[in-house]
Length: 81
Image 1 (tube, one colour):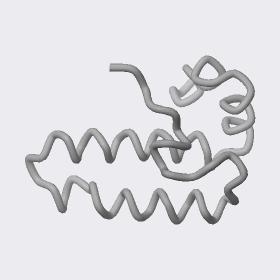
Image 2 (cartoon, rainbow, N blue to C red):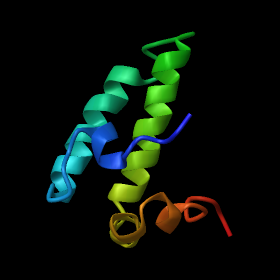
Image 3 (cartoon, rainbow, N blue to C red):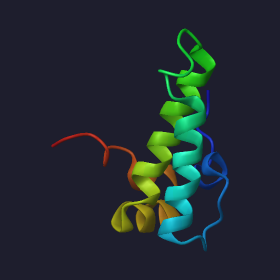
């Protein structure tokens, strides 16, 4: 399955502030959190997708790389090392 645009995942646009991005993530995290949706694989997937999007868009360097190069700019940046 192809990844969805991180801005689309969080429901924000490129000009959104850090606070707007954080609010959008928190709303989705609460809605799809595994503790609230035990056994729901779809909710778990959406939670992970939202978390990945937030990790990139909340970090200025990752966000800049994503804006410039798309997924190619951030692939591998989330992994340690």
